[in-house]
Length: 96
Image (cartoon, rainbow, N blue to C red):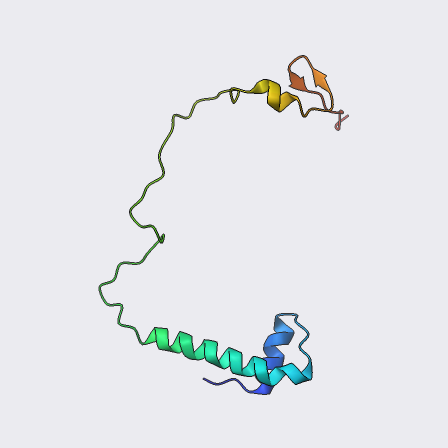
C-alpha cells in the first residue's frame, strides 16, 4: 500500500502537523518505507510463539510487606513544609 501526496496531506491534517509543500514528497517516501516495513513484519510466521507482555519476560518484581511506615526520615520530609502544626503539614482551610 503506497501513499500518494494527497494521503500524506490528509495524515498531516489528522495529526495536526503543518508540513510545507516542499517537504511532502520526502515525507511520502519516509511513510511508504515505514508501511513497507510493517507489511514485511506481517509476513513473519508467528505460529506457536507466545505473546510477550514484557521484554524481560519471566522476571517478577520483588514483593515487600504492605506496612505503613513514616519513611524513616520524617524530619527530612517535614523540612519542606512552609508551615507545621505539631509534626504535620499545616494547610489553609479550603472548604467552609
